[in-house]
Amino acid sequence: MPFLESAMNSIKYCLLLSLLLISSACLSQSSASSSSSSSPVVSIISSSVASISAVSVSSVAISYTAQAVLQGYFSTEGLSPYVFPGQLKFSAMDSQWVTPTANGWRNELKLKTKYRKSMYETSEKIKARISIQVSPGAKTIILQCHDGGAGALVKIFLADMVEVGNVNNIALDGIFDVYARVKGTDGVERKFPLGTVRSGEGFDFEYQNDYGQITIIAFGRTVRTMVYDGSSVYLKYGSYLQAQHPVTQVEVDNPDDFAAFYLANGITQDIIKFQNLTYTHN
Image (cartoon, rainbow, N blue to C red; front, side, top):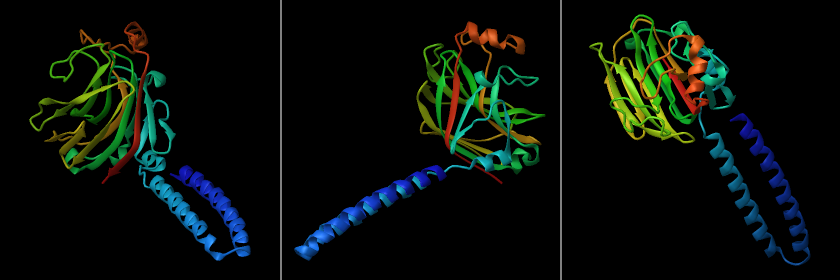
C-alpha cells in the first residue's frame, strides 16, 4: 500500500533519528568513563530497527488488485466504489442505479465487453473479505455471472427472508443467509447454502470459474460444480438490492415503486464492502 509505506518510512525516520541522538549522547558520556556502556545502546538500536522493519514489511505484505487494474476490466454501475486502496464500498441505496430489466436498485462493477467469452473459455478468480451493513429484511445479490442469452448462471445472495433451503430461514431477524444459485449443465438452477452473517460482521469469500467448473468458498464450505455454458459471459459484483418482500417474496417490477417499497419495509441501508480484493482473468 503506497500510503502505508510512506507513513511507515516517516515513522522509521523519526525513530531512527531519536535513537541516533540518544546514541550520540550515551557514546559521548561513555568516552569519559569506559567503552562498555556503548554495548547496550547498540543493542537497543539494533533491536528497534529490526522491530520497525518488521512492521514495515508486514504492512507491505497485504495484497490486493490495484484500482487501475480493476478499472481496466470493469465498468461501474452507480457510484464509484473505490474508497481506499484495496477496499471497495458498494451501496445500491446511495446509487439508486436502475437498468431496464432490474428488480431493484444496484451498485456494481461489470466486466467490460471486450473481456467476455464463453463460460468454458473463461478462467477468472475473485477473492475478498466481505463486510456488510444491511437493514433487516433486505435481500441483495453480491456477485453474479451473467450471459445475455442464457440469463444468470451464478448468483450469490445475501438475504434476511423466508426461503426454502436457507440455513436460518427466518425473516427480519437480522441474520442474513448467504447462498449460491448455480445453473447446471442440464439448465436446472440449484441452490447451495453457504452460511449466515449479521450486519456489522464479515466473512471471507472466494469465487472461481476454471473453464466451466465453478468453485465457491465461504464460511469454511466449498461448493464445486460444473455450470451451464454461455456465449458472452460477464462477472458482476457489488450490491443489487432486490425489491422483494421478505415474507411473501412478492417482487416489485416498476422502478418508480422501488423507493416506496424500501421505505415501507424499513430497508434504509445496504453497504457491502470488498476488502483486500484480488482479481485475476485469463
